[in-house]
Image (cartoon, rainbow, N blue to C red):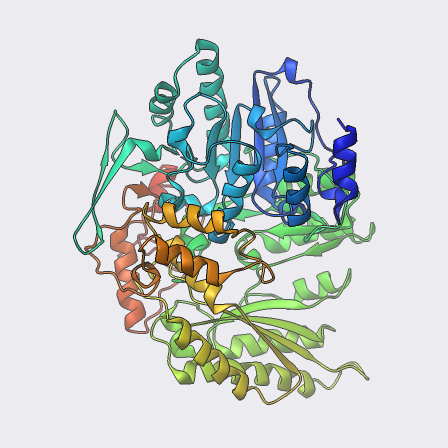
Length: 618
């Protein structure tokens, strides 16, 4: 495992625990006893990657197989990158410390567009050719998954295949096929043609893209037997889906230092800006009995004192009261905190707040997203100002004195009054604290306002909308700063230049591959980190490649334009997205899925079943 060179490298970095492995719960297998070795690559630091539930699920799933082994790889920080280059050591996994290039499958989870340069850097440090066309052998097979592969065209030059949708079942199918072709000694091209026949597998090299004179996509044509449209893969029954009974306990502090259990997939709300709310449809619940059992098992095996109930909107879980009753019955005695992220202001019951407050108080987070009701209707954020204030009131009565509010700037149809409304709503939340006759003595209130810039994303009703220009976003941020008149409200604004690039790659096509590679070679990496982001280098890359950022980020699309991801099917129909887009332009809200089915058609991927148990569509 460790040799003198490795020890020298680790002694020269700030956080050697990122690279040593050996944590409680880690699985180390004899490589001679397995047929397929899978290097799971998270293109960000150990602290971020080890907080990701998807990594833990796939890691456990693969290692539960007798014929396969999964090992972890994280993006090395700059100090470790320098050491790898200094000693000419290829990037290695944490479990065996073997070079990544020696593995049969190298999988990247793409959670964020601004991690793309990290993927290229990890391939480069592994001494694996960047472009798929330069890799002739069957292995290592470079695969990608995660939400960003719903439009994987910007990275199409670098990956051999993509796993669309949910990975629990398709991962096993892919390993089975690779094992078969590895034994047969198949050529890479033969394997890829067969892989394309698996539901949920997209092979970019099996599709030709033509462009119009104006730069828009003219056509996307499948070849060599690949399907004309590739459908995402879903898991129908979450109760029987794989979930690890134990987890790795990180050796250093990570972003979310706790155990996490998923409670349901999908979202009933239909917020028109939210890609995840559409990508993870249809709605599928997990039963309280199964959640409780999984929480107990992971808590017992890990020793964590906090359980996070994971979903897109935790308080929309249909059996939340029953679940909390079950969990509190044993977590209270064992002093284990139950965390509910992603709460909504319109359905957070006081009884739940009181039960959770009995364990540990911390700040509560809510996302009104817009400062006025007109704009909240336009984006389909079905929360009223009174509901926000009522929830704040309950929070303060329950003993909380800190509230976090999340908003977006640059949303379609937004006006100056909408921007000012963010400050006004935050002030009203502050006022609610001081109206409480039982407020804690000697304590003041803190309302933290965070604003992100709107980024139009594929498979949302806003996928056709232009992003505000950099100048427009910064003007609105300054307007908001000037509108806040109390120190009780703090404001943080997302980097507008970073949001611009995110919009470019979110809706980009294959022509961005050369820009991405150019930016990487100029030194771009860890672009999501403020102290690492180099917008000037990105501008140089776009200029040298004669590619316009405005074309991708700031251009409105017509409904009949061929989009780079039109050959990918995530279940939600384009006609539904167009209907929702038109409603947004009229500031008209739609009911949530439990109130009325709006006919998104995502249930077709689950045999017509959607656990929202919605009413019949008109």
